[in-house]
Image 1 (cartoon, rainbow, N blue to C red):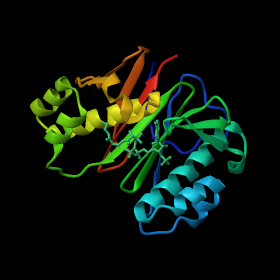
Image 2: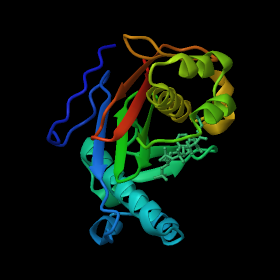
Image 3: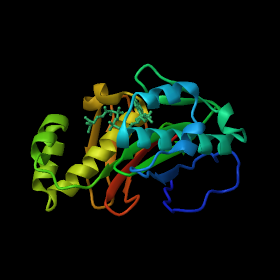
Image 4: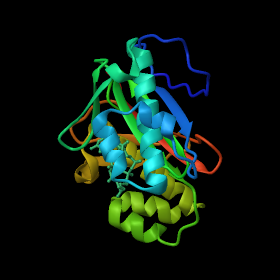
Length: 222
Ligand SMILES: CC(C)(COP(=O)(O)OP(=O)(O)OC[C@H]1O[C@@H](n2cnc3c(N)ncnc32)[C@H](O)[C@@H]1OP(=O)(O)O)[C@@H](O)C(=O)NCCC(=O)NCCS
C-alpha cells in the first residue's frame, strides 16, 4: 500500500477512490461560537453539543460539521442527507453514503479526520511538556513499548508517537480502550509498525498536521 501525505485543497465532489486514505484537518476557533457549523449537525448531534461546554463543544461541533461536509462530498449528497450511526463501542459509522469508513480526532484547536474504503483510524495530540510520560507509558503500554519510550533520546516524542498510533489503531478496529492489549506498536526509523490480534495487514503513519501537533493514521489494507 502506497501512503502519500499531502495537504491539498478539497478535490471536486466524487467518490472516495479504492486504495486511498484521505486525511483532512480543520482549525477550531476555541474562543468563538461555531454557529454556522452547528447548523450542519443532526438534531442528535446538536443535543450532544448542548451538553458540552467551551473548547470541547467547539471541537465536537467543528469535527461533526467537517465530517458531514466531507461525507456529503464523497457521496454526492447534501450534508443533511448524511447519516452517521454509532457502533456498540461508540465508533461512528457512515450509513449514507455507504462504503466509506471514517475516523475523527480532536486536540487543542485542531480536528483531524480520516476516510478510506477499509477500516481506518486517526488520532491527534497537541504537544505540551508533561511530567507523567513514564507513568502513562507504564499504565497504558506493553513492557516493550514502555521500554522504547524510556530508551528514546526524546521520550516525549516517542511516547506521543506510540500513543497516537495506538489510539488510531483502536479507533480503526473500533475496540476503544477495551482493546488496548490487542494492539502492539514498534517504533523504527522507517516509521511505526502495528500488529493487531486477529491479524490483517495494517499500515501506520505519523505526521505533523500543524505546528505543535502530532498525529497518526492507521489503515487496514484489503
Ligand atoms: C474514545 C476514544 C476512542 C478516543 O477518545 P479521546 O482520545 O478522548 O478523543 P479523540 O478526539 O481522540 O477521539 C474522539 C472521537 O473518537 C471517535 N470514537 C469514539 N469511540 C470510538 C470507537 N470505539 N472507535 C472508533 N472511534 C471512536 C468519535 O468519533 C469521537 O469524536 P466525536 O466526539 O466527534 O464523536 C478512546 O480511545 C479513549 O477513551 N481514549 C482515552 C485516551 C486513552 O486513555 N488512551 C490510551 C491508549 S494509548
